[in-house]
Amino acid sequence: MTNTTGKIFRVTSFGTSHGKALGAVIDGCPANLELSEEDIQIELNKRRPGTSAITTSRQEADKVEILSGIFEGKTDGTPIAGLVYNTNQKSKDYSPLKDTPRPGHGDYCWIEKYGNYNYNGGGRGSGRVTIGHVIGGAIAKKLLSQFNIKVISHVVQIGDIMAHSTDINILEENISKNPVRCGDLEAAKAMEDLILEKKSEGDSIGGIVETIAVGVPAGLGEPVFGKLDGDLAKILMEIGAVKGVEIGLGFDVATASASEINDEFYYDEFGEVETKTNSSGGILGGMSNSMPIVSRIAVKPTPSISKVQQTINLKEHENASMEIKGRHDPCICPRVTAVAESATAIVLADHMIRSGFIHPSNIEKSLYKP
Image (cartoon, rainbow, N blue to C red; front, side):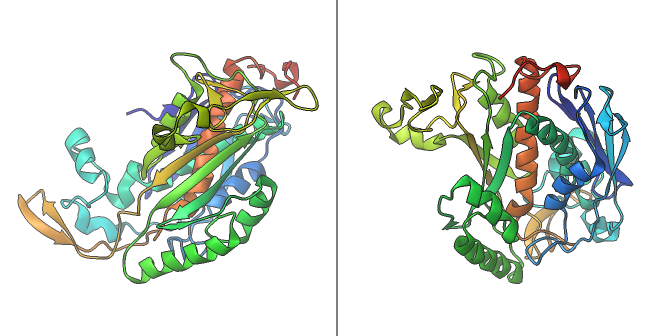
């Protein structure tokens, strides 16, 4: 089973939804980065459950504990281990699911592949394992911030309700003002109402999350294998419940002509190279071009719903029906924003080191100055 992502800046996640703890080990972070538990806690709080009526009612503090890799308030170049204890598991809710795989979940595939499947809360396949993503992403975001690179994720669509485009500075302010984490406050209220409506029906709803990275220099990524958009697409697609990834215009390029979507270059007033548009989402030929990197992920509805669904009983070899109990998000999108930010930051931090913008051993030796 593969549990590590990255080539130089590497994140290995561990733990299960109902186990003793979850966390991550981050290897390849250069020394002399100021880092505290609070830096990581800020990011974990964005994906923490039980924070509003539109999230699962599972109450977890998700308090992080750093076990290694920090000396006198700074990274020392050794592996950084972060741990979060589970404190509010209710495994008895899942005992009826031992032999009846849940529709929309990976239960059946896990059973077929491994034979020994921890079905409590989805085990290692639970969305709760993204705690490891966020611990790694928090460190990546702190590293990137030293070079004026910022990563922001927000909800742009829930069901058929779409948000209007918002200036990135207003966006960052607005997403903290509503539980949906949408930059359009009017749309956010309609999205919240729709999520609560689905919740009252025992159902769930999906949506789209957009991630924007600004301040990224030109030259991250490789022209053939190791393309920046390829690595971004991979890590974003590996987030549970994500069924589609777009970079820039994404699938809309299929209906456009080149004259409409080619990003034309020009020199700005400071002599810097920019493009008049950003159809490519900040990536051309597999490499960053210094424009904002824009990606979107399609997030499916939470498959755990209280409506009666049809399945099979593997022990009795017969068809069956099920009604899933337990505590589940009626929409995953608001909490996925923190995971998408983290995933994007992990890839960017890895490529910043791989491309020579960040010194691999000591950030104070980095030659890149934005």
